[in-house]
Length: 43
Image (tube, rainbow, N blue to C red; front, side, top):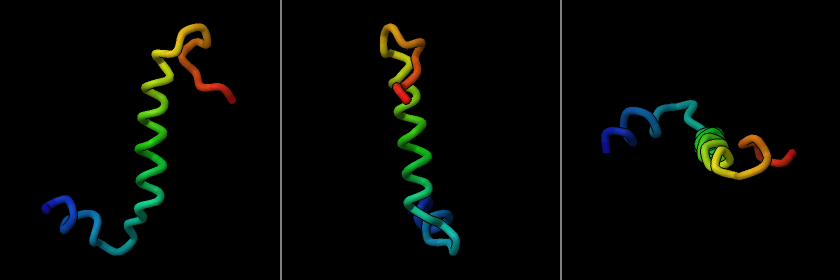
């Protein structure tokens, strides 16, 4: 509840931007577990 009232409901918050950032963090972390490509996702 505090997260919603103090951050998400304020003007200027963009869920799309926040989602993309968080999703990329997760994908980068998972990529480090991939064998044979130095931990990088294919371009």
